[in-house]
Length: 276
Image 1 (tube, rainbow, N blue to C red):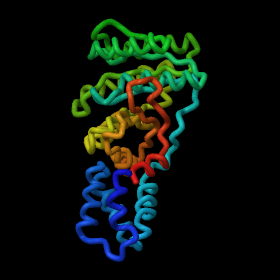
Image 2 (image 1 turned 60 degrees about the vertical axis):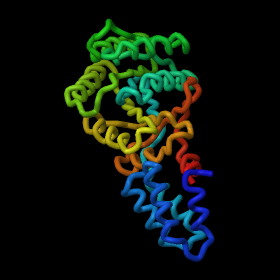
Image 3 (image 1 turned 135 degrees about the vertical axis):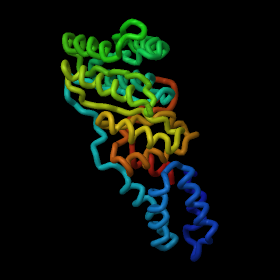
């Protein structure tokens, strides 16, 4: 049963749900990382209808909170996809998984290891590239990230690659200089190829901190979508709704396990049903 299923069962079909039942539902909504504003909207909608209609009222409210922006990836080719996010969210792995998904759709893909501040990230992406048979462009240790991205863009253009995926540094979103560096990477790449997507990787287990990351990253660079990672059943995952309801940035992909195939387009209806 979903996150709210057992609690909804208590208030559905009863003439009068108890105060403790409603309190339990509100606590579950908050624990699922929906945030106080969206949780309050859900509670108001559930209270405004007969108990047997509570589930549908909640579903309707959650559905209305979803972004109305397209979840489809840009079809513009050739172009660049920037993958951004803080360390530990699964950014480098998501870069590789996305590359694999695009190759599966018949696209040619090149990866750029621009997270040069962390040598392990470069090695990790190169290992993924070997495993997936996708070329990875990288520079010397501690090379300028913008320089690596620029070189990769030139190679992608020369080789007529459909998509260049750039794994950027896992910048702490509280560091203004690093956020400025991200803007520099984007500007430098756009001298060669257009940037069609800027995808922020958010760890589903980070709760409301994920919303903070999304808000600050969106102030530095225009985000076109979210990749939600570590969606393996242990995370409430309500942060996806909180981000979409607050910022209007659509979740485009979800990642779960460690395999390249543990990556799929975000299905909002299935997601909502799983919560309920």
